[in-house]
Length: 491
Image 1 (cartoon, one colour):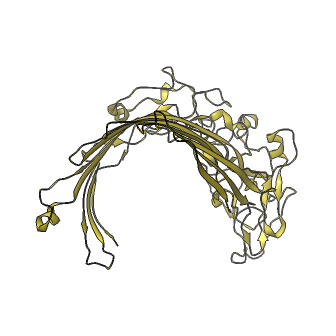
Image 2 (cartoon, one colour; image 1 turned 180 degrees about the horizontal axis):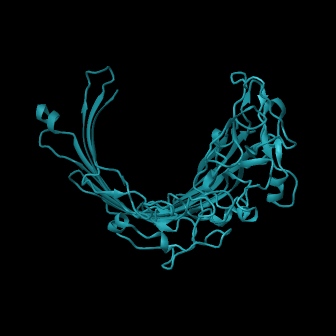
Image 3 (cartoon, one colour; image 1 turned 30 degrees about the vertical axis):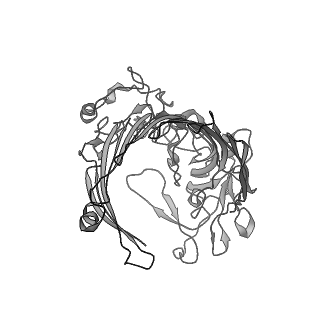
């Protein structure tokens, strides 16, 4: 990986400055782990006019020879940047700033590595509670020898005869994730001690990595009387990575900051907005990976991001405690103390009501993934609730109608809001100079911090699984009060 760039400022007029830049991100090829100089195969799509047909015709394939390359092209991109700063009145009191840039991201190694694909040897895992044929896990390499007289037959697609094994794959034409960022900020100074600011920031990301089991389709368990035959009958779950995700955010904020003459400064920031995406995370297993409802229509589950906070108010202060003594022991002991606080009040994070029950009691769209949404309740997809409501139970299972067998419910993803957060932290600190510690001097800082000063019970997200006996209730809390002390020596 390397990323050369050029960037510089240009003074267009005494009141207007431009910042222009260009960056090139080079990520090379993505490659699999090579075990004992033997590359590991990937599930590769076959021919077909639709993605479902390509999955159905897919097979295991070794790519890139002994180099194990998993992408057929180099992963790279050009990223221009532009920014400006404008002194509106020319007197330094009011500034308008803005900018736009493109940013590429490198996929984490764990996103595409594969160590357990067939045709490596297998060991069976059998449960008397599971009526389906035995499932197999894999081991490989010189340090993991198969049992004596154990043989495995490979089928025509690279799977294993006698069982539908899980496999992993990666789009050979994967694109790097790309994000467009833009912002505009208006800043105003009133006098020498009062500062006002209003900001807007937006992002649009696409080509985001989405990893999920693609070897499934809605209605399969209905069509096949409760049996999973899969799109591709030669395999079980196929965890396949594609660069198809999108995400957006739009946020505004207002800030007021005031500095007083006796060492006190105050600041308040109010932020509001919305962040959306198709899926806020991914995993590396083939079953239920990424919690994508419909692998053939990922875009249908676009909703608020898991980390979306619609409103947040932050208040913070710093107070330099004054002392009348400038020198001597009293100055050393009582001087230099700083007291700071930060208070955060914000709305709750979104959550989805779902069921993890298997078909036919759950798995409403009957595709083999036990994570599905019900129908929207009569009161809609939003409720106003107090902390007491979350403790007693925000809603009942009977509030949510079940969809038609073989179809996903219409409730949608992340429609409800969890409990809000209110938290106040305080900090006492004192820095003392120690010129005798070293030739360059040193500073010793003592810190005492209290998190959640008032020990407010900030409830965790309610249990959102319809199949749980605790459905609708918050049974955990976040950020209980904690006190810590510390010493920090700088030299």
